[in-house]
Length: 222
Image 1 (spheres, rainbow, N blue to C red):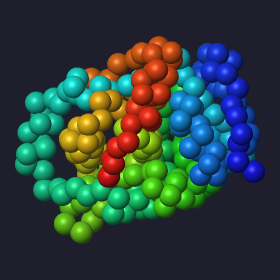
Image 2: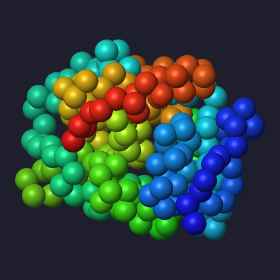
Image 3: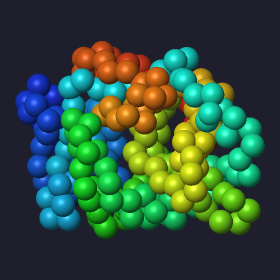
Image 4: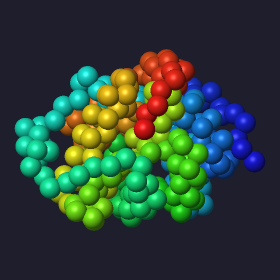
């Protein structure tokens, strides 16, 4: 049965943990994202929901690309696509074992459980999850996926099989979303990679105000 409501954000603990249990139906996921909450399972058995304080956002007007990555963007033998291989992208992301926890600390293992993979594949089929693919000829060598509602986009995960492939996919995402009038990307928690791109942390209350405006906009992201 879809989740009907979540606890108030103020009840989240210092790690951002807000709720435990429920399901990963499309309706439950949409309710969560529309309220600034996202699932982050601790393992295959425990479904947990987070609302971290502070929140990491990447304002697209502040997006920063290093000189070396800028050169790579021009010379790398890659091409990019959108929503052409979502299932393969999320499966590759699930295979990545080194992640960060809700406080941005290195964490071994993956939070993308089998149930999460299936849930976001359904969310993709419902039109709310999207992927950016990076190809070297016919081989998928990198990519990322996230959730889009209105003009809101939440980045979820990325992977690479060639150096810089995921970073260049991120550059492609920023260019694509900018062309759609999107002003910021929800990175959820700060990591060294997002920080290198110019992401910064804002209070939960500011994030929720920005979110309310973004999801109310009628936008076609992809």
